[in-house]
Image (cartoon, rainbow, N blue to C red; front, side, top):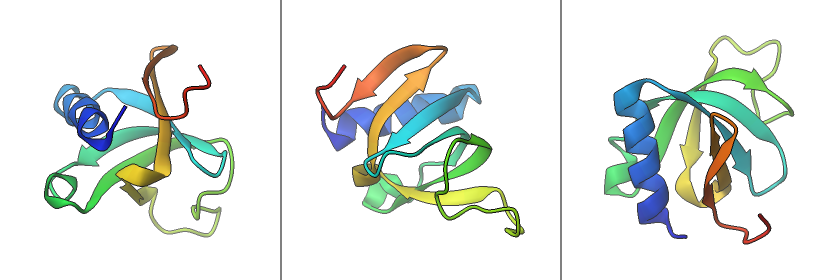
Length: 92
């Protein structure tokens, strides 16, 4: 799957205000709510709010904001309601 498919999924999640789990290429994952895909539509990043983090993604206990800037190429998998909806890895 490619970035345009991933972006379409993230836009849908943003419009529906649904949370999802993002699995990153370095192995960690976050449960997030997508807040803005506007920049990603022009080649930039997606802004997400971390609901729960399973590993360090730069957000730590001292961070003043639960928001992260995520680049499409860093996302390997997206899981919504327990189901895999995007898989760049082919490991599913």
